[in-house]
Image (cartoon, rainbow, N blue to C red; front, side, top):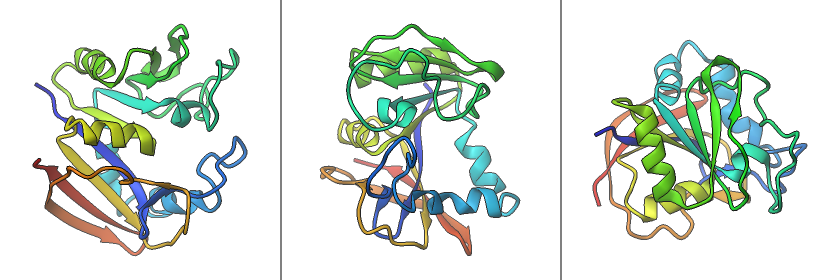
Length: 198
């Protein structure tokens, strides 16, 4: 059976998005600074970047796909990534509002799942075949999968910045035991790979 992985970039104070998230600033105030390592040092961090995109299917929360705020879908919204999102694989979006699947260029299809995290994981496993399933975010989605014991490997990419507020990764997660298996990095990020052992 395929593994379930999760790659997230966080600040030193544990946030994966800054305060005041909005459609104009989906990662919140200063949240874009978290990901400098991907864009300013892509060659030095090539292995980590490849690992993020190597999954056979992805799961994300509604806010990661569409930004903050509840309510029915804007029928014209097609995600943050343009017509060819970087996933190139099936993506399952957790939501309370049904929507028809959205086929994009490059092999990405967004499927909207309204019946919970286990259903999304079962569909993602079917779609991924022998490849891993990646929990892409955001914070609340990852918290649910960690609390349910459904993530096998957590890969944290820690940027040497402080955000002070926003979406904190591990809020409310109490039953977690991690074993670090690999550490490396550059001036803009420290990569730590953890096996989830609880």
